[in-house]
Length: 462
Image 1: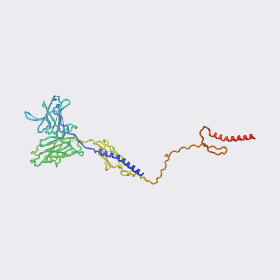
Image 2: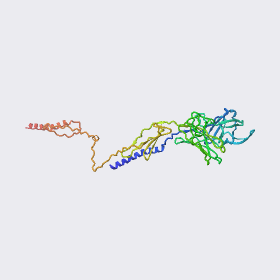
Image 3: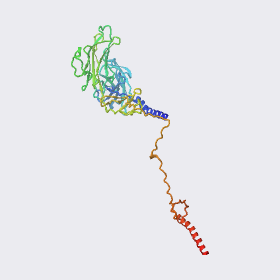
Image 4: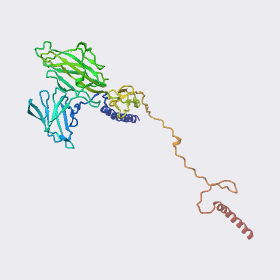
């Protein structure tokens, strides 16, 4: 009996382990805390259309944050036979594809980059692909060849609508305000990270202070106003940044940090600003001046972008899961629910703690994204104890379980003697169809009749 109890207990324990283990392992493997954070739109399509009506259409984007890639497609049937695109190439405008050629004119010789068609659309109109590494203006001049139809492609700092992300540009002060693409806003620990702005200088011995004066630095909310590059507001004062801005919620250069030292090793000057997570759209500007000897140009960096904080989906807090608690202390375990599209469960294999988290950008109705149910409650109920004896009492039979007795046979009738009135037993007779009582009467009458005949014969003999 004792051996049977031990075996039964082991089977129960193995059953609990086999049930709980897969859920625990699955929870550890699939559980992920949600990454609830703002997002920043991809930089793309920042060229305005060409300023020549329906001659061509232009699309711009960046893949590396540095080069502006352009796609110009001819749309006018009049210029469908365009065989090459001529792109202006100077010290400030560098096209990274095509063949460079010098063209002589009445103003002298100029160098251009000539590009072959990259392909043709479904209607047979040619399109051209090229990228600009640097540019100093807000436009680049191109021409359709051989007609020499001149076109102007405009670069735009502001966005025409909320669905159009913007290009990020930075100025290189020493080299004449070249404009380049820049990195998007970074999300760090689910909030916008500090933005570092760097301007490159050529620090030389003539720079006695090795410092540049930050004339205007500001991050500001751009809703609902957007600005073209030439319209970006600048600070009106230098020290303390007390000038008026045509915007509010500005994060400006602190009064004690408006003068930045130049890193003489790298030739850069860097400043940093914090961006509130509540801003949905932002723009920043930076004006820097230095000594006239080494960097006489004012460097301006204008930036505008879309910061989107997703609206969270509210998920009800799930009920406390059930607990498997067999008899015996310290053996309770959670019955881990299955993961869903909204919830992800995690069971700590060491502590036994059960936690649940929401997926994606959802939150619980209490505003949190995770919840711990702790360890399961154990009742501590002891298992029943079985006591064995030498002569265990036999269990009383259950009357309901006893077999029913067979019905007794009905005894035959017991005849009595007519002479003495005493009863005598009658053996069972064979079933012959003759009434047994008549046979008995006949057997009783036969001796009597024989005796009567004998008496009658004796009388006749006398």
